[in-house]
Every structure is written in C-alpha cells, then in structure tokens.
Length: 299
Ligand SMILES: Nc1ncnc2c1ncn2[C@@H]1O[C@H](COP(=O)(O)OP(=O)(O)O)[C@@H](O)[C@H]1O
Ligand SMILES: [Mg+2]
Image (spheres, rainbow, N blue to C red):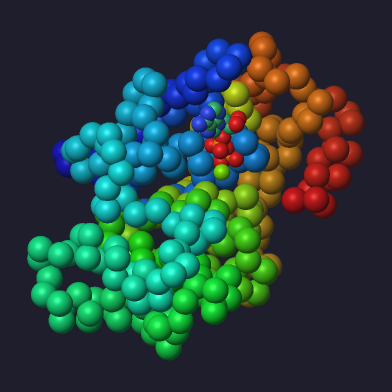
C-alpha cells in the first residue's frame, strides 16, 4: 500500500497569551490525496489560517504533526507554496521580478538563466499576465496582483499549493474569473490544493472535498463533504443543478445551524465548543431559524 501524500495527524496547537495558553486547534486529522482540491471552511476565527500555517511550516503544532510525502513538515519550504489574500508582492519589483525571485530561490542550481526566463514567462502566461510582466504591483488591479501571486506560487512547482482566502478581497466578477482560471490550471497541472474560503459557492464549485471546521476555541474538523460533481465544472450549468444545490445546502446547514456563531458567548471557559466532532449537539432552540436567516443574508 502506498503511503499517503499529505497527512495531518492529531494536530493540536496552543498559543501562549498573557492570560495563559490558548488552545486554538484540537485533534485535527486529515489525509489529502495527490492532486486533490480540498477547501477549509468555517467561521471567522475558528482556526483555518492556523491549520494552513502549520502545513506551511510557519507554526509548529503543540501535539501531532504534518507529513508530506513521507517527510515531517517542520519549517517553510517551496514544495508548499502559499498564496495569501493580500498578494504580498514586493512593491518595488516588477511582476516579472516578483516571480523571478521565487524561481531563483528554487531553481538557481538546476536551471540556466535562459531556462529560468522561459519558466517565468510560462508561469505568467498560465495566469494570463505576460502582457503586464514589467508593471509594478501598484500599476495593476487587485485581481491581477492575485494572479501574479498564483503564478509566483506555481513557479516554485510546489507539491501543495496553499491558498488562504485568495479571492476574498476581490469583487464578484473578478473572483469568478480567477476561480475559473484556477480550475483550469489545476486540471492541467494536477496540483494538490488546500484553499481556505468563507464563500460557500466557491467551496462547492472548486473542491473535491470540503473540510468544515467547528468554532473555536479548540476547533476541530466537524464534517467532511465529498463533492462528486463531474469536471470541468461550469458555474452557469451548476446554478440550477440539484446535486450542486444539495452540497451547497449541506455546507450552509453546517455553518448556520450546527456551528451557528453566538456572538455574546463569553470567550474561553467551558462549553465554548458547541458540537462534538461526530455531529450536531443537542436540540436547538426555536429562535435558531430566525438567527440563521439573519446570518445567511449577511454572509
Ligand atoms: N499567534 C497567535 N497567538 C495567539 N492566538 C492566535 C495566534 N494566531 C491565531 N490565534 C487565535 O487562534 C484562533 C484561530 O485564528 P485563525 O487561524 O486566524 O482563524 P481563521 O483563519 O479561521 O479566521 C483565533 O482565536 C486567533 O485569535
Ligand atoms: Mg484566516
């Protein structure tokens, strides 16, 4: 039997705070297959970025750990490239130079200058940014900056592409274009992708599986939904596809019924975790439906 590609096992993390240790994650277990597209969804502050930062090697788990292709993750590395919500391009470098920096870091010893140039151009072309190669980040739109961030990550030829709300700051149309580009690129390259999102439609459209996290503190994986929709996926055709809407409903139910956020709940203490990993907690009060509707409209 072949070993798993990416494995998170028994991951806990506690952050030191002035009031004592804060347990953000409790017993996160997840196996990800090569080429799989996995989304992490959950309410703001539940611990999604923390999970990703542990996979990226930016944080160390307090207990448990991460194994990628048989090797323990204990520091950042180019085989786990990260795309952040706010592009994080260096403002004084051109689009080309931003990608070049990453390419040099990874391929300085294995590619000639000409090969590196070709590889940078190739990756800019993948995200349709070759025309703006010599512009600086402040001369291009937010959507274009995210494209460059994706090109920079892909140019490192990562085993795993980690994306933390990559399209969260973009308008709906730009976001839709980038989602379609990402699906096309992933179909072509077969990257393993872990993407954080709080957009239910984005999660269903892009993912093979959606990992739904419970609210923190001590957040864990509540449910995992497999999205068995054929690819390539077309957002228009799916809009009134019953299977698509069923998946969407499952995620909404998890977020707004099973894990509804109680804003007034005191921080920390007992009972802050609302459900067990196995499923929803005790019966909900009648007013939940009203609150759920109110939240869905603000989502
Ligand atoms: N370095 C840190 N020190 C203390 N607490 C942290 C740190 N990083 C994250 N947290 C806390 O861990 C929880 C999860 O944060 P985060 O992973 O950023 O959530 P999400 O990405 O789901 O919005 C939050 O309560 C946050 O305040
Ligand atoms: Mg986050």
